[in-house]
Image (cartoon, rainbow, N blue to C red; front, side, top):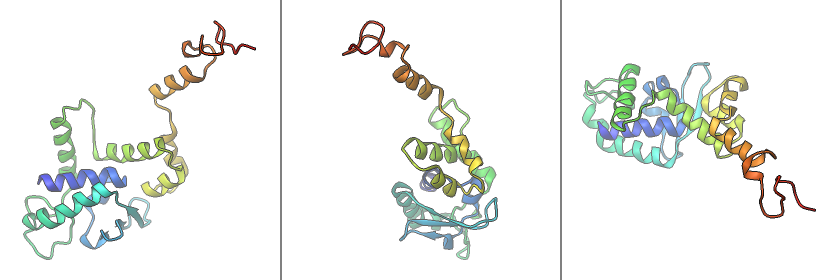
Amino acid sequence: MGIRNKAILELLYSTGMRGNELCNLDIYDLNLKDKTIHIRAPKNRKDRILPIGEKAKEALEQYLLTGRNKLSKDVKEKAVFIRLSGTRITQKALRYLVKKYTKKLRLDKNISAHSLRHSCATHLLENGSNLRIIQQLLGHASPRSTEIYTRIAPQELKTGISRYHPRHKAWRAGPGKDEGGKIKR
């Protein structure tokens, strides 16, 4: 179960897929050679292909090679992620799994599968990704849905003001500046 759970968490964070998309994944949706996953008819009824990060690929391969066969009671089962009962993982089971690891890590935040989706998008944006790429990754039909990730976090705002505002403490008395923070001429 631990191998499966690691693969689930890595995949959610790596791809930004929705929890229900993960629950609905079938074996034939995976292309590990190309490091992609085919998401079929999600929320907005448009299929999309998602790239899989290296760590998620490794965790998924380990699960498929060692864990999945032990959980599957039916050789014809097409679901990627299987519960102890031998059936496809449900959204309820996924919620429980994320909560379990949140508690294990002693995080006092309310983390969900959707939080991992938001973290994926936020980290992409923070590291310079184009908003259009994030929109396609998340499967948003409208750019407006993706714009929520452009909101500036309070700490980032504080750092920006500290660095760039001429009346802020960090600007005062530096090399080539007078006591008021103005450039010496």
